[in-house]
Amino acid sequence: MNARDELLDFIVSQISGTALAGFQASDSARQRVWTLIAKEKETGLLPEEKLELDDYLKLEHLLVLAKAKARLAGGHA
Image (cartoon, rainbow, N blue to C red):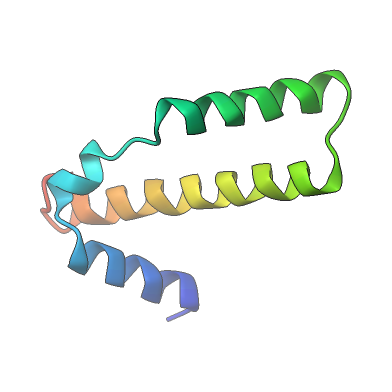
């Protein structure tokens, strides 16, 4: 088992499938991501902005995996 899988197992065991399914980033966080994506396409990002966007995308991917794992485990996500 790798570190990602251990973290996913922990998240799924500690957060209900219903809570995982219902989680959404705040409007301001989503707007910030869309702003970064648009800027990346138009003019490019500063290094710290690129890191911020990359971090968000990694976290989003982890959340998708956790939701799927909870669904497979019967967690109603």
